[in-house]
Image 1 (spheres, rainbow, N blue to C red):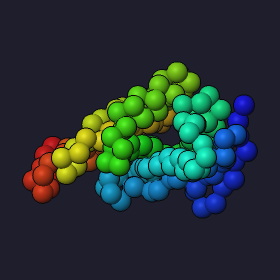
Image 2: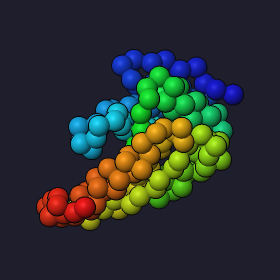
Image 3: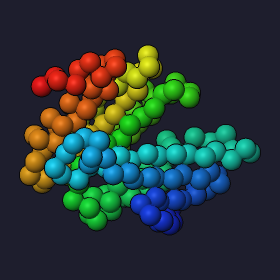
Amino acid sequence: MLYPVTEENCVFYFETETGNKVSVEFTELTDAFEAVFPIYCVDIYNKVVSNSRANDLSGSATRDTIVSIIRHFFDKFDCALVAFIDTSTDHKGRARHRLFKSWFTTFASEDFIIEPREVFVSGSESYSLLIIRKSYGNTAMIIDAFDKFIRLANTPNGEGENLP
C-alpha cells in the first residue's frame, strides 16, 4: 500500500493513517560536492501529531511510499542522492540509519549502490548514505567526490581541504 502523495517544488508530502505528516525533500548539492554530475540531498521529516504515539517511519506503508518517492525522483532526474541522518535532536540517528539502509538493501539492491558513511560534526555522530543507480556511468567518480566531502566534514576547521 502506498499513501497518496502531493508534490510541490521537489518536496513530497503524505499523511499516514495515524495522522502523522511525512515530508521528503530534495535539495541540489552539486556545487557543495564540486561535482560535474547532479547530486541531491534527501531529507525525510516525520511530524508526529500530539495524540499519536505511533512511529510511522517503521511501518511498511511509509517505507514503501518513501522508496517509491525516491525511485520516482531518480526516474525524473539522472542523479546521485545523499541521505544525511542527523542525530543531534534525539540521538536516534543510528536506528534511523539502519532502518533507511535496510529499506534500500531489501527493496532496491538490484537497482542501486548504497555507500554508508559516518559523519562527525561538532562532536556529534551522524550518518549518511550515498545512493546511486547501478546503471549510472560515473559511480567511481561520484563515490570519490562523496568520500572527499565526508573527509572534509570530518576534519575540524577544514584542515583536510587538501586531502586526496
